Amino acid sequence: MATNKDWLPKTRTEQLAMAKDWLAVLATEGAAWKITEADKAELAGLVEDAGNAIAVEKNETTRTPVAIAQCKTAFEAMIAKMRDMKKRFFYVPPLTDADLVSLGLKIPDHTPTASGTPTAQATIETYLVGRHELGIKIIYVTGNPADPANKGFRIWYSVVAQGETPPASLDDYTNHSLPNGKKK
Image 1 (spheres, helix red, strand yellow):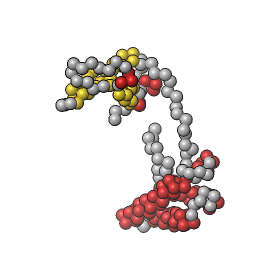
Image 2: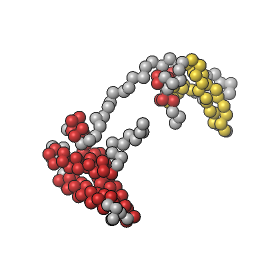
Image 3: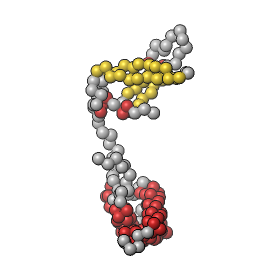
Image 4: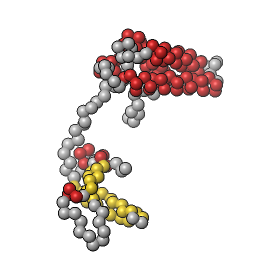
């Protein structure tokens, strides 16, 4: 499964098609979204340049290292403009879910995925990393480490001098959370 989380399609042909779709949608909705004519005209020019460049690059008789570099440059400029427009205009109202779909963008999902109640218990082993550095190794005692509910953990800690009494209440400790078991 692909791990690309970018909204932009992977191939140049798909990127060009998305940009052309944007131009079609912006022709009717651009004024309502307060997109300036200058921005629409700039995107249209960059889409035309990218379309011409990819046509030259894909043609076997005109495909040269220069044509490939020109195509790359044209697409970088077009994509930069698309990213700029998305950031400046598409993140603010009045865009609806239907508007985002019409632009080929995914609807933001703000609902967290339930992972269940944690059931695992863990213990730690400490080890000396270096001077004034203490490492910890978290070891599952019970529960399934593969269960998504058991992936994160919290550590409450306090640094005390040798012989000093540690805090009595959990509120006096520093809390540190690592979601999904990832190291920081």
